[in-house]
Image 1 (cartoon, helix red, strand yellow):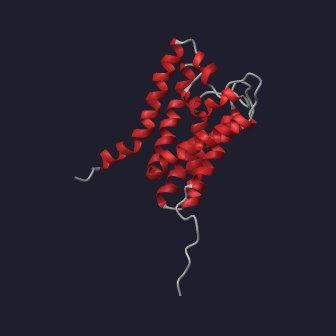
Image 2 (cartoon, rainbow, N blue to C red):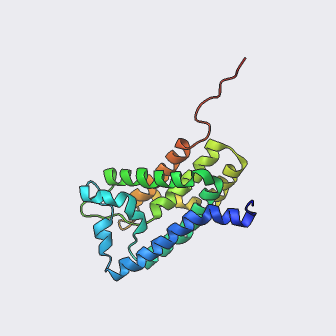
Image 3 (tube, rainbow, N blue to C red):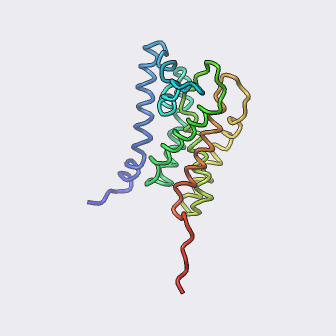
Length: 196
């Protein structure tokens, strides 16, 4: 039996909704443990122990306000990315987390500084959606790119180092990883030869 439109939409949004629920479960556990998991599992640049933070740090936050600030844009941009490219959403998410996190680990400010939060993924989805509009040029991808630019174009300011408490590096490298994901996962990876 084919899925109706509402069921199909929920199926596409299930991964991002599940991810946000996990963030909140971990936030309550992190709070209960006095935020020690941020030190244990946060991304500490150029520290071998900090490598665990590449996949784990997007799940950790510095407080309830931090988690709440990431929740709405994560749902909105993650939802737009899932709807714009449902078959490649999980792959794009993994590329953003791994490539963006690796760049933060290699190049971000260190010195006992731990980077945590899902904002790198938020910026990654923004970069992915906008780049997908240019790469794919399908109506769905261009519509998503235009909507993301209109709703969240102000995010661009977040890639500038204007507050020492904010990991602008996660924002910048997340956005670049999102652009890379759109390029890597594009459907027309080669020129189709014409047969004479």
